[in-house]
Image (cartoon, helix red, strand yellow):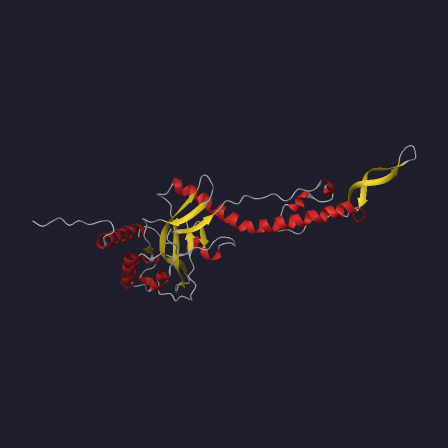
Length: 285
């Protein structure tokens, strides 16, 4: 009597069979609904080629981290010195992308006047800007601080907006990970059908995780080790498009066998892209 065959989870035959079963079940489920052929229809998408300045561009690293964002809270503009109150509208200083807050032509100050005894004294009044040397000096100093604040806020705003875009998704995934998923897509297919329908979707996707650290509030997007890349051609292409499924079988087999990093040159080679061709990547939800 022969010895029972023992196989482990990484056995190529086991991986191939599992991937084939998963692909079959996925196709069975997707056949019951109308396919999405344009990724613009997804609820959220972040293009890796358009990440804001200051955010490190993702690469094929061993740890699988694609994106790391620190929480950047908004910073209030520098407060107005006492001497400038009444000379500058505080609302004009709130927009870091706006023009320099203007100094009024006139404002509060002290003017000379005669009292009831005929003595000349300083009393509160309204003075012209050109006569208020202390106001002009204070304004020049404060304006330099305001401009530095505006530049820092303009730089931080895109990173803050990206963080605010992804943080709610992390909360939803934590609560409903069985209903929603976040994926990294590569190999963007941009095409228009004879019926003028736009096809704009990535051929290969990989599920990624999104977590927010409770102590530091740092947001991290990383590949999910147990979720292999999948070829999504069957999800949105059919024979009416001139698509021949059999031609994609070698790509699917190589994808399973080699498991290249989605952002690696090997993945580009698998997709048949030349190194000098831009490979747009996107995280979509």
